[in-house]
Image 1 (cartoon, helix red, strand yellow):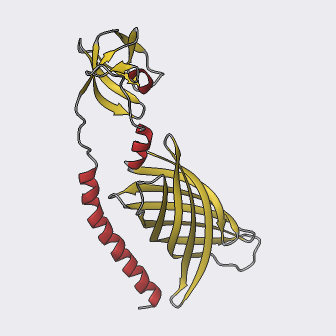
Image 2: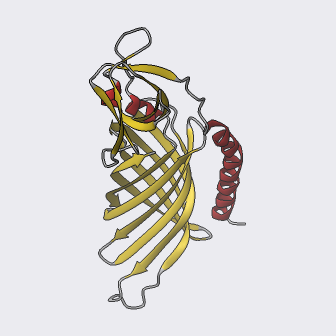
Image 3: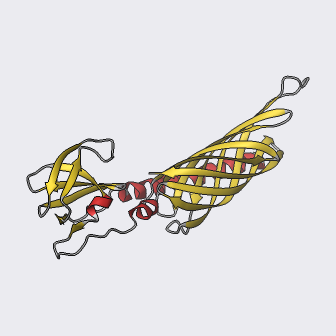
Length: 258
């Protein structure tokens, strides 16, 4: 068997083993521990309860000053609370920060948006760059398996002077400092590379072959649910049993997480 096929087989086995180990970890980590219920007293003239987590949902009930609410759930910057009369609604963080704890002091919250980033599970993004000197567009979807490990599916398109190229690959991503706002990462994986010559070229044959990649990059948390990312990748297209072609790519993009 050729060296290229042997390399692909070893990569596929490694990817399968990592997925087998990572998925149980991901399943066990998906359900965070339930937070203890916290009772807060309304200090403003009133506290408005919305029917859903957003300004577009109507206010259906008002809790008056001196009454209490209990926090049940958080979704981004909105909290689901239960009033003394049993009414359940959603309140923005800004309003809850003007309530009082049972000790009679103002309620304060940690930077919950940064906490969301540190607990992110799924990331979807897109960007552009250069692939072998030609302009490239790329999309990616990443799913975290365990704290430092995730899988990522990426697809790209390159429009060259004499041909067009599209590719996709699935890879394992290691992010040792995933709990930092600036987080370097590395990735390796396998996929498919397809090159289609322009119709104006005579007797030019297209290429549809296996592809391997090795990536090093940096992502940094910007604000809200957005992350910027820059990376450099070495692609290897196995065009024949004993022949391969390497391409270097640079890209910069923006992603959101949830």
